[in-house]
Image (cartoon, rainbow, N blue to C red; front, side, top):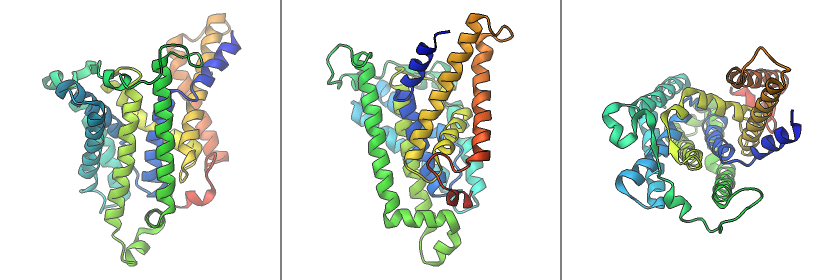
Length: 322
């Protein structure tokens, strides 16, 4: 078993585009749940809306990259409004029910055979990333062992993560952010001070949803394809794992949590595959090992919640509202 290769593969996941996408989406959940107390179980839906909004606008209407980006962001904002208008005046659990159902509705809509020409149905859409890579300023060559396309998407993904983290940090330090955290702790008290709690919740839902849409784009650009199977309910649960690993009411927590999540997944997969190939494990095949790694990560998360429920960067005060 080549431990050097396993460790190198795990280290490569720290700054991968997928990790950047998970960090962005988990940051959106931090705005929703960590700072606002909004129990959103449909972040995968926002990611799908962003990815499909960009892909459809590019392939069907031939719009430039930045126009497609604006369409994806606008679609996420409209999706947040559709979810928030009927639910944000009600208890938090209603939002959880609506969002998890809405995310599944989005996934089933794009797989409808009648929309195959637009959404690609179950096969999804491909070959829409040309406009993005056309902006690549890096000439062909090797960059830290990567080609110029891989290096470009990593730079864009992590610069976007840094920008969004800075914006969220500034927002949460502003009077608007302090009101939002007050709503998380006791919305009735905030309402008694004359604040429009409904409007603040809606704004938070839209901001977190837009972050999810941006994550959906970063998630799909390296693959050059968007497929509905990638946006199932389990994706939202993985994002909550990243959020809990890093800490609920923090800015850097979701980023570090996403890094830990993918490093642990890569390590467990590499070790399990190595043991199977060496013959040390004979009662598992590689398909079963792929599922077992999620079980191991789940056990690790359970231990984390027992011994450090506030996450890596969080503190126990954040758990008072949960």
